[in-house]
Image 1 (cartoon, helix red, strand yellow):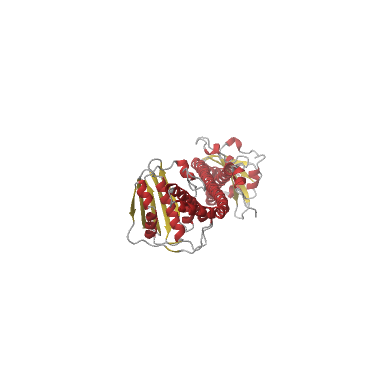
Image 2 (cartoon, rainbow, N blue to C red):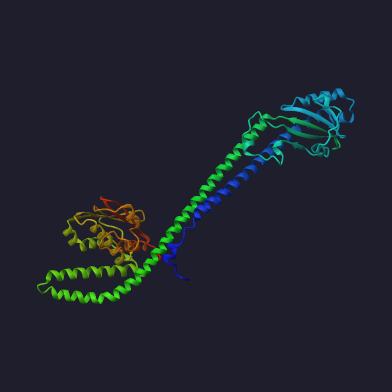
Length: 457
């Protein structure tokens, strides 16, 4: 697989996948919420209205059995008994109007006397009821009139009548007539509208939560992709560092050694001061080369228990002359016995050496350097803080990029090298800094490192 170049990664136009997903998912969630609310509210309304119709059927059936109402359809001359029976029926709570049909579809009794004797005309629900089926008709149940948001917020006085067609059967289970009830169950219909409002509110809320969760997950994935892209860029920079370091080491080490040897001979003569400057610059160049090689060639070494207190003492001792020359005081604070994490001791020592070097670079006119260590949880926290010039926010965000430096003579690999060494152990390096107030570097070292070295970057 061909390597991905930094130029190809950074030169591509943005795809705005997060925005596209947010827009598309919003459309999908809105469509799903509307469909779910419509179907659920329709189903709830149908079940509640039909259940109310079944209760009316049971009531009418009980009334008919008590008064042998089926006989009135056989013997239509018993008008007095029919009036008595159906007058009792007319007193049902919530009943607005009632019609009684015989098997010829003729009205034999009605709360509207002018309707008695008339034919029902075209009435599909009546025809179905004459076959023995319970039929319910309401505007809320029409296929062409689904429950819509405006239905959910109708005023309570805009109620819909419910027509119930109840078949009447004789003792042989034959249909002898049909009772049609126009019911105005105010409480039921108010409950239907109330539940419909709750269904819509629940669907809208669940859709909103789902949408926000999806967008949050995609944003997290987007950030992760961005981090991985930066890692790829850093790895490619690392590969360039390795190639450059090898070339620099091969091409400059021998000439630098010869220059330093000549300078040492010059130091024996009258040009001692100039020879010292030459040796100082040669040593600085060799230190840069060593850092480049260490940055590019880490890994593969065995992990052994490391005494952090001894390691920090060695780092402080190595910089003692410079701290004295710059007027920097040092304070060390850690308990007498510290746990010993397993680490690559030379790489870890170089990491803390880089942190101390950066701290001293930030205090050219003196200051205070503080090193502390303490066990916390399943790891060890080591802090290196200074009272130097600090860093601006934009520099703090880029400080771990290879070759990014704010120092005139810096190479820009010290902090990336330190973080690389620590992360290989499963730890972390955190920086906090304020301009003019100094910088604090906090290093976390796990007491149980990874079973195998972490991947580069």
